[in-house]
Image 1 (cartoon, rainbow, N blue to C red):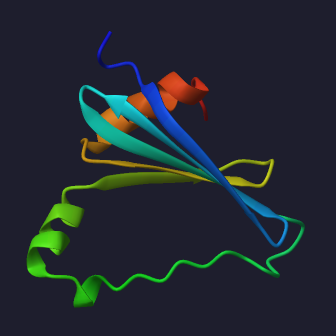
Image 2 (image 1 turned 135 degrees about the vertical axis):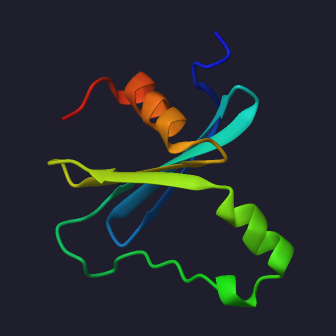
Length: 103
């Protein structure tokens, strides 16, 4: 089934007790990234990402606008973001395929 997520790669980064795992899947020929951030006990040493979208060329901003994202957190301290050039309804289906039905 081409709509089932198929893993392409996984990368893990640890910093200040936090762990970020980025997994790239393909869904119907489209790359979808899952970013799983688990934090250490406090926000000290929190990973920060700065964006410069206002400085990006117009064509890059337009391409980024076509990318949707879905972010959720759970009781274990994980924050997950699913990103890809798919409609949000498709990202919800990918989330269910990866994690099952969630409240």
